[in-house]
Every structure is written in C-alpha cells, then in structure tokens.
Length: 234
Length: 234
DNA sequence: TCCTAGTTACGTACAGCGTACGTAGTGCGC
DNA sequence: GCGCACTACGTACGCTGTACGTAACTAGGA
Image (cartoon, rainbow over all chains, first blue to last red; front, side, top):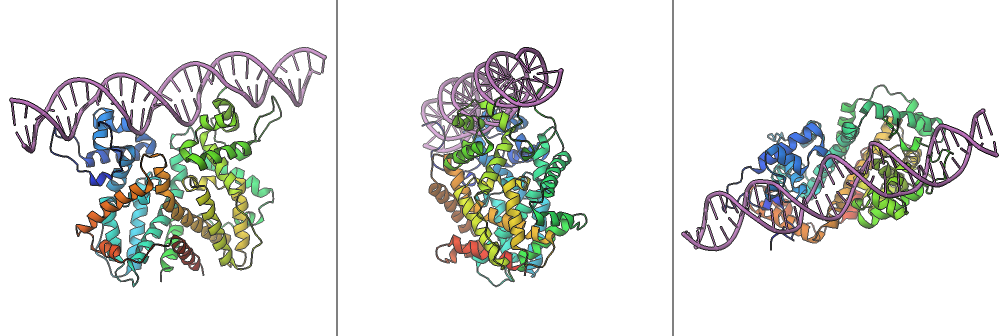
C-alpha cells in the first residue's frame, strides 16, 4: 500500500497540505522559487532533485513529499514564471494586444532561458497559464471568430515565439557547461557551413550568403514574424 | 595530450576514417540507423550510448570513436531521417510546394515522434538539412523576395510544423514509459481543467468549452495553420 | 622490410541522476 | 489518549554520460 499512486495525478489537483501530521516546512511557491533561481543561474541541468532539496535545506527524499515527480517540479517552475506575466486592460485593438503579449512572453523567456525547453502543451493547465490564456481571450473579444479559432491563434503565436526565442537561445544554453564559448562553437559551425557552400553543391545558399543584408537585427526579425502571423488572421 | 579535443567540433567536418589503424567496423550510417530504430521503438530514452553500442555489437566506449559526444549521435539521427525527405521538381507554384514540404515534414515527424524534441537550429548544417534547405529555396524561386526573407519563411514554417506536431505528440511520447496510458493522463488533466473552469474564474475559457465545435479535425487544423502562415507572405 | 605513430577496441571507474523503499517522529481528528 | 496520516530522510538500485588506461592492429616513412 505504500509507494506512489499508480494513477496519473495533476499536481494542481493535489492540495498543498492535508491537515494531518507535522506542518509542511515549505510551500510550493518556495520550492518553485528555488528551482527557478537555480535554473536561471546554472541552466536546467542545475535543477536536480538533490540540488533543489539541498538549497531548500532538506533531505533529497523529503522533496518528494511536495513534488511527486521531477516533471511536476518543472510544471511548478513554468507556472511560477508564468506569474511574471503582467496583464493589462484590453485596449480594444486585438492586434496591438497580441503583439504586446508576444513581446512580454519573449522578455520572459530571455529572463529565463530554460523556459522554451520546458514549454509544453501539457503544462497549459497551471493556474497562471489559465490566467494568461483567459487574458488573451479577453484581448481577442473584438475579433469576430469562434473561441476555437482564437485559441488556435494564441497557440500558434505562442508556438512561434517559443520556437523563435528557443532558437535564439539554443546555442547559449547548450554551451553553458561546455569547455568552450558560444562564439567558438558558432565560428566552427559557420566555418563548416562556409566550406560546404564553397563546394558549389548549394548554389542558392551560396547566393543567400553573398546577399550581405547587413547585420541581422533580431529584434526586427521577431517583430516581422509576429506581424506576419497576426496579419494572417485578418 | 590524451583525451578529447578541448575545442568545438562539427561531426560533419570530421572524416569518417583517417586511413591509419584498423578499419572501422561501422559507418556513421550504420550507427544512425541503429539509433533511429531504437528511438522509433522505445523513444528517445532508449537511445543511450550503452544501448546503441550493444545493439551494434560493440563495447560502449568503442562508440566514442565514432561519435565523440552523445549530442553528435542526436545530430546523426536528425540527419539520417532528414534523408527521408523526398524532393521533387519545383512546380512553379511556391505556395503549393511549401505546403507539400510542410506536409512531408509532418509525416516525417509522425513516423519519428522523437524528432520534434531534437529539432534545433544547431543541427541545421547537416548534409541532409542543407539539401532540404536548398530544395526549399529552389521552390521559392518564383517568390520575389530576398534570400533572407525566404530563409525566414522556411524557418517560420518549419518552426510552426515542429511546434504543431510536437504538441500533437507530446503526451504520447511522455506517457510512453509511464505506468498509465495517454488516455488516462488526458482524462485526469481534462477533469482538472473542467473543475477549474467550473469555478467561474475563467468565463471565456468556459465559453470555449461550451462551444462544442464537433470533433477536432487535427488534419484540417494543420492545413488551416499552414495556409495562414503561407498567405502572410503574399 | 621493419618500426612507429595514430587508430580502434573496450574494460574499469566515477560522479551524478531519478526515485523505490523502509523507518522514525510528529500532531490532528476521533 | 489512541491511532493514523503525514512529514522527514538515509540507504540503495539501476541507470546515465564519459574520462582514462591498456592492448591489438595497420598504414606510412626509413
């Protein structure tokens, strides 16, 4: 009879404390905050059950009283930073509001570079995710469309932002614990790409390389992408 | 002096064999094929260096002669399945060609459900990725735009497909090694979502739930999303 | 032709991971 | 006040990636 439940559980459905026995020493918010801090400082790899427990000042296995599986810890983290979303009074211009939401999400992800890697539709039910989704729907009130369409718009936009920022951050995160720098890694990859292009097998890529459109403006590219997606909805 | 290089390396820049010493027992293609087979059968978790080596019939550490880091094994895998892309003669209608490419990518990801998780811009330099990118650029010849814009279009489209299919597959992959089924997990999450919505805190989500738009047609939603994005480019 | 240097092959070992399980101790509800 | 549900946590298992050392092998240079 001991042991973990053999049936799936949503951590949000599990009450934080049940009233019997010693008072829990921490809240979920405490735990999430510690995990987020560790991830911000040392990347997702720094978030291990042992490490989080040590930082909280308790034994490793005690953590399992609060967080049945590591995945739930991730869910707590996503929800915690989701709380950083600052909502606003919908302006009546849904396009502008969607832009604003996307920019905010991007800022959030740059503050917490591990976030894109944890983004999963599975985590879409956390309190702060629901709060954010409801807010976006409110912003979309002026758009004449079914809720189904609106939710698709939100999902598509979030997906694009996640992909976009994830790409921006991928190398940085990847090289965090490696003995060489992001610049070195990029240089090596670009050198290889150049050698391939020089082989003549990829004429259009070669042309793209020659195009020399000046320094890439990540900011502008992001805005451009957002507008394309938003415009697609009328 | 012994030990691995302290400088980044691209596996594709490293020759498959150098001519001295015993002949290698396997090719990269062999290794990639085994890893892909394991991942198809048991998910990404089944792809460990030990497991792959065992399947190849060699010692674990021998594998490191071919693949310096596990990450490179992933890169091999992505490239290997990228080879499954069947290219075609550009039709002259770039919209149709992009649709075709996206559908093919989706099919590829459904055949190899671990693929979305490994999709990273970092792997964009593998031979088959370059081949695919060049092909897409050829399809976009009729579109009047800079190569920079075209590459952005391709990236955006790939990102959307990855996000979309990744979302479709996330739960399935996640529950693969769990003691309960995808359906059970979904049921629990939806039950929780329902309880939250019933609380009245999310009126628009409640309305969305009530909307009852009939059974969700994933296929149609995917096509719809593609058209939206493609149409955004004119 | 032989020698040697660069490879391949692979066993051992280490640090770290998630977490199952067992055992104490604590305090609320009956 | 009794009992039970809960917290706390040490130990242990099987797994991971991979550093390192050693033995076998073979192509290139003398």
